[in-house]
Amino acid sequence: MKTLILSFVAIILLIVSCSEKKDFNSNVWKNWTETESTMNTRWLMYKDLLKKYKLKGVSKDSILQLLGKPNVQTKSKYQYFLGATGKGVNTGTMTIIFDNGIVIDIIITDG
Picture 1 (cartoon, rainbow, N blue to C red):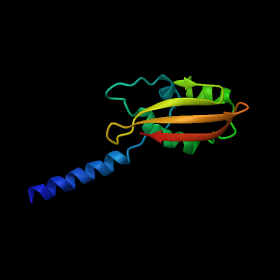
Picture 2 (cartoon, one colour; picture 1 turned 180 degrees about the vertical axis):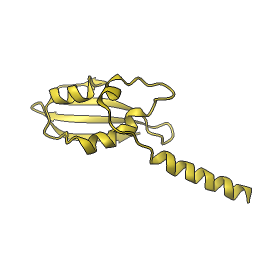
Picture 3 (cartoon, helix red, strand yellow; picture 1 turned 120 degrees about the horizontal axis):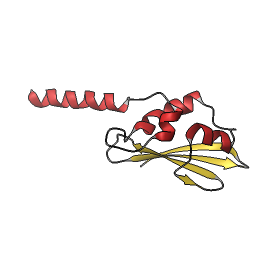
């Protein structure tokens, strides 16, 4: 019986932690530093970001104003580290792909 109760509690905690989210905040995103208590802040905000802002068709300058300097930058893409995903030791990355300075795709990786 005790094992059944513990299993039930573990399942509930897993469901709650997987559904956790945060509202996107540009200032929090741009000023985020990974600490033990904030390691998944960006990961929790990215869905709200993509829901509130239609990024496809937006210029590089607009992305920089909204998200700040990327962690990795090339001529055709910006990569933003999203921090811990809450799925084991996985971390996330958001890659924004440009063509002629305009967003054509956004790829979220979790691995």
